[in-house]
Length: 128
Image 1 (cartoon, one colour):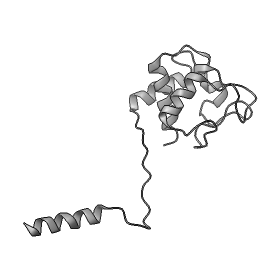
Image 2 (tube, rainbow, N blue to C red; image 1 turned 135 degrees about the vertical axis):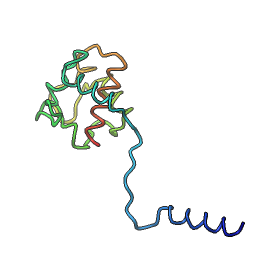
Image 3 (cartoon, helix red, strand yellow; image 1 turned 60 degrees about the vertical axis):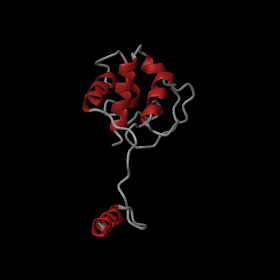
Image 4 (spheres, rainbow, N blue to C red; image 1 turned 45 degrees about the horizontal axis):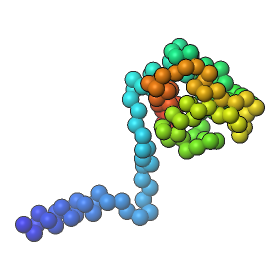
C-alpha cells in the first residue's frame, strides 16, 4: 500500500511545474475548424455582407490609417480574448486609437450571432 502511494507522489512531483522552467502558454479559448472557416468567409465578404477585409486587408495585416493589423497580438481596445472580439465586432469602435476611420458595428453588415461568433473565431485563430 505504501509503495503505491509513494509512486503516485513521485509521478505528481514529476508532473508538477518546477520554478525556473519555461512552460507552454495556455490559451483560454478554443475555436472549431468549422467556425474559423465560416468566419473567414464573413471576414472576406463572402457571407453575411461584412467587408472586414476592406479596412483590415484580405490577409488581416491591416491598412495604415484605416484598420489595424489583426495578426500581431497587439490589441488597442481590449485583451484579445474570444469574448472581447465578439463584443468588439458587435459594438464597433466609434473612436479608434490609431485610425481616422471608425469601425462600424458588425463591419456595417447585419450579421447574426453565429456569424459574429464565426468571424471572432477566425480573427482569434490568426493569433494562434
